[in-house]
Amino acid sequence: MRRKSVLYLDVAEQIKADIMNGTYPVGSLLPTEAELEQLFDVSKITVRRAIELLSSEELVEKKSGKGTTVLSNRPYNRLSKAGTFTEYLNDSGQKVAKKILKLETVRLTPDSPVYSCLGEEAVKVSRLYTLDDQPYIYFNYYLPTILSDVPLEDFEQESLYRLMDQHGIEILKFQDSFQTIELTSEQQKNLATSEKNGLKRIRQSIGLSGKVVEYSEAIYNTALYPYVIEYEA
Image (cartoon, rainbow, N blue to C red):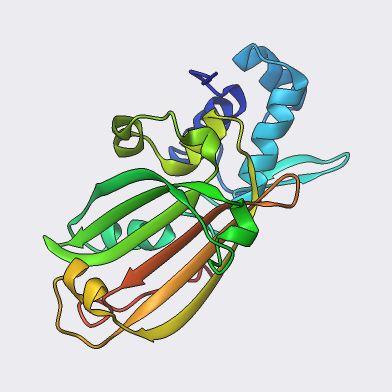
């Protein structure tokens, strides 16, 4: 059954908002766990998971006996965090839009790289990102079949990773690999380009059990705009 609210995510998002608006400046200490429990009226476990999430984004650092220190007021510090590149595009004044082209449950064969990750069946979401109204990134996400009953509208309106968490699929880490590829005729059609080469990113999201819970392939038309990784000093 779908959870309407994920408490630790809500707590983490509120603390993050307070970090961004200066309530908790960089270098300051967050309230203690006991104080946060009272503030949000939640359990100790919920607070700890929220802090762990903020720590994984390198916004805070928790040290035993010293409390939790605010490290940064910039979101997505970790390079592997979902959304980093689209955040960069939006911040640089690019008009970024996305739409889902297709949602289906597919059968996988043993020769598919997804088969060893998710088994014989997966939910496949095809999505197109446009940059200033031109096709730029074509995504294929492969997800566990527990999401097969999720309507298209939810995928359109909700963050993919929040949607996964709402269905009990928690992500521990991402593994991204990149390669330059020769575009197929289908990929050229999807990206509305005659360019021969593009950038392919493969992402495997690893769950708490150590198993892959998301396998995605993204094809970038880098002739339209280069892929950028922004480092924080």
